[in-house]
Picture 1 (spheres, rainbow over the protein chains, first blue to last red):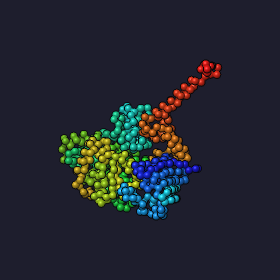
Picture 2: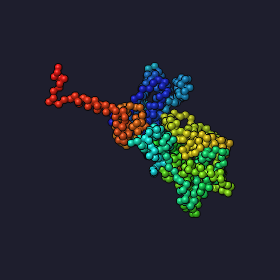
Picture 3: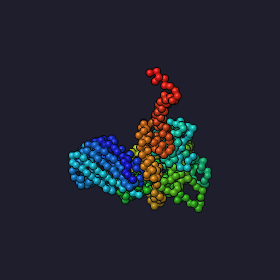
Picture 4: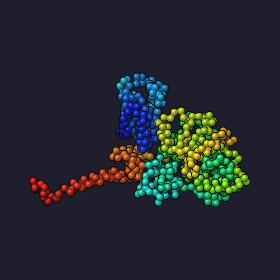
Length: 142
Length: 436
């Protein structure tokens, strides 16, 4: 079975008011498809972190979700500063968030660490000053 | 009459407006043929529809005092919020004595068990990591099992105070001497009635039934006014003031805070709570160990069967319990906190048991949503376009139930009709063309 795209959303820079909408929408779709609770929970957390990353760090981008009976794939694709040191970016507590972002309660440096922790696999591709493309794979428990 | 629920509809009073439909937190109501219907599998007995209906077409069923006659021995359990109903400086002893006079042989405070749960919760939180949710409000437990099953493991695995107290009292009854006895809960809300008929996390309830506060309140006031209550002997020795503070939102956490557990948050009002649970699912609540979530605004004092204004009742309880800091001495081993079984997911959202079929339906659903106006006008009888589309995909509604779709279909039909009138049978002459 070919993977079906169930989410294709444009995320705007600093659009905090919409933060969480994609994650909620995806949760509701997965619920309709009968995906188990554990995988819904971790997909929600991953999607929310990626969504907020686009809002906080990028110049805007796209969030997509694909699914088949085996796995869920979340793809985040943005234009923006990119990630200089990908290994460090996944360390807990590492953050490049500016003070104004931290004042809003974000930027604690747990985002990408959480994405990694809750995914079965991730792939990152980035060019500093240009883009970041991240793919999180969630294997569905049967 | 429903086996499962206590919130019901009086059909003759329903005018077919969609106020309740739009305000229902689980989208459990539809209007069909001018009358509201409540979907049994989605209703969580929160009573929001009773609060919303201006025609008083929604009501909730409870037992009458008459029922006491069926038993040789009757026991009443009082909710903490019950004491908020009395506006003078309340005296729990006097109020309890008045309840005896209604025909009860024993009267007990659920607040007893509430204090025990507070102690138990403190122990539980010190042994388990993570964010936990109080199990005391049955509406919240049902909301989670329906819409947030991914959070079921976050609910503390304890019986609610009412069930715990019913077990405790039932255990004390000397069954050799008394066999035909009852335990009635004087209830502030319909959800507690449902929890007796259709318990969550346990096989059955030890409660015989529930009597709404509003049914006994005037009688209690009369008894207090006109009777000398000195000779009534209470079975319960102490007044659990700390437990009584559970009756208003924040009370449960106040106790935990006094005990040194400070990473707590209290939220009341079901729509607020849904937003909070969304955040919890996303992993976006930081630092909080314990959530006291109560569906009614202001807490149990806001239950629809209560008589006093909920804000006044909140004040009454707060002002009368503020100076009290001591637990009643009791042995936690007297209680059976543990649930009989895991709370199950209600799981009503799935489009199909088969993933491939569910995927097909989802695709149809998305296309249908695209073709709808997105105004969420509820004229179709569903709360919003998305829910309506789901009903159509599940075969529960017709696409033309949408007034905008219907209008477009009629328009298209009219266009077709007018085109057809210009089509002529081959044997006739087209006059206009001949004249040229």
